[in-house]
Image 1 (cartoon, rainbow, N blue to C red):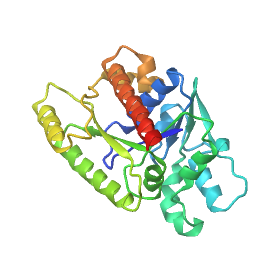
Image 2 (cartoon, one colour):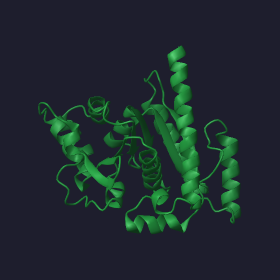
Image 3 (cartoon, one colour):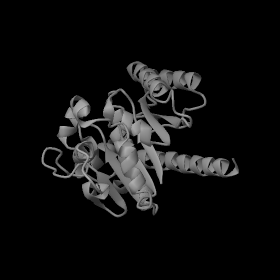
Length: 267
């Protein structure tokens, strides 16, 4: 099982779109894929027409039941099918916004997702986590569980500041972790027509030459149209610019996974 976290401490950078696009491509390519919504906004859950205000089995219930020390918890009991072959979701309910206030009463909760995924290691090939945009117990769970972090970033000044905060957070969280996850910065909603976007992309290349994906996800109205229909953009319009860009990104990530596995085998 490979676990990726899509994370950034700035909202509106395309996190959920990235999770949905990569997840749907993985499942359509034959990989058993699980998406996990750890964002209190519940955008990933809502994308698949699941109401975060009404859902009964969710990631909140998983945290709560784990904190209550309930025996024989089966994490699969909290998972819902998306309606797309090979693509499942551990959805969010709006109640997860209260988890940080409950941590003291529930006990140590930093490895809930990691431990749950260990129980499902044979059930999925890939897991993609939609992380919240703020540091707290949910982001810590996402970062603790993952092997690779995908950081969507807009090509604009404020987004670059958010990227700096995200990298600082990662340094803090991974300070005591021996095998630190790799990270890939993905420029999203790129508009080549604007000077600001081109200049910001150049700054990204200069600042993060070893971790920046060498392409971009272009601005594309098909993404909005697909979300309205509740269909992942790569399945809604496979030939769209954004779908082809996400497919290119996924091919790179899969190639890197293969190379890392070979290095570990040799080591």
